[in-house]
Every structure is written in structure tokens, then in C-alpha cells.
Image (cartoon, rainbow, N blue to C red; front, side):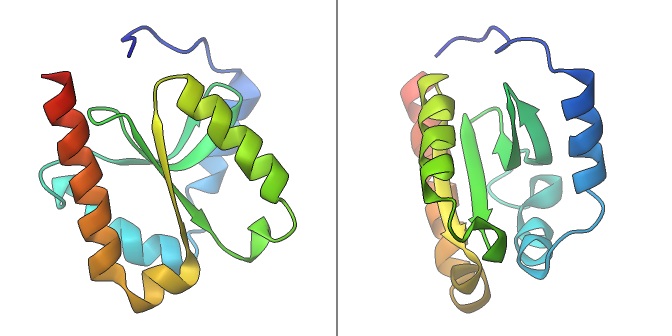
Length: 126
């Protein structure tokens, strides 16, 4: 995995990411409350982060992990999500996706999976 920047972020994308940080969905709020401020295994997560041409929901640079929440807005855009994930993975990132139901019903399992991937990724880079 390369430590170089993917490339410069277009100013419009940066502005859009900043706008997206304000109205969190209920699922985003629930997950964010558990992973923010290094609450999960001391890993630093950011939200609505521009990477390349995309804005990802949550990102842990240290573990090269992207977390995407698929709510109602992802209905009928499976091909776009697959292409997006493929590009991000091609840039050396891992992408894990959860739907809102998983956040609401199995948050502890979701957090366990996220922590496990972060720890594994850190171990493989050391």
C-alpha cells in the first residue's frame, strides 16, 4: 500500500464532503457515536472523507479501512457501488459495507467486525 496521496481533491468535492457532514442519518449517528474520538480500539475515524473521485462515509487512514452505510439512497445503485468499491480497493483500501438494519439491530457485531479488520490491517503492515 502506498503512502502517497491518491491525488489532489477537487475543491467542489471537498465542499460537498463538508456539506454532507452536517445532516447525519440516524444510522450514521449511531455508528459515529461509537467510533469517533478513538472510541473503537484507539483507531482514528473521519467521516464524509473525499478520496479520489468519491466521498466515503467513514475512513480510518491508519488501517486503510473505508466503512460505507447503505441506506435507502443506495437502492438501485448496486452497479455504481460495486464500481466505486472496486476503485477504492484498487487504491489499496479495504471497503466494508453495512446496511442500516445491521446498524440498528446488530451494532455490537458491526463494531466487532470493524475492529477485527482494523487490527488485521495494522498487523499486516507492521
